[in-house]
Image (cartoon, rainbow, N blue to C red; front, side, top):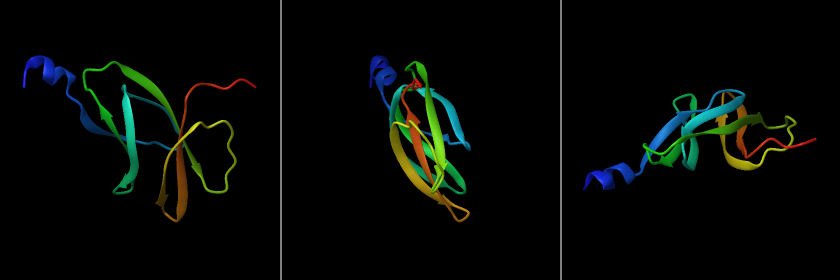
Length: 95
């Protein structure tokens, strides 16, 4: 593998999801899945470690709680008897 190949190689990284969510900075790439690792919700993303970082807006909502304008469903997990749903908001929405 050449140096150029190594710089372009992708890998899988994990990122913790904090409650109630918020901005998460990670290299540009695709979010693959959301699962618990122990008792911590984690996102797995396919990224190029040398890619520029971007801020992704992640939100965590419990079943039965109200929310508005969340764009992309990422996944669901259960923790301590509560079912949580994780979304990404692409950009701020106007009123």
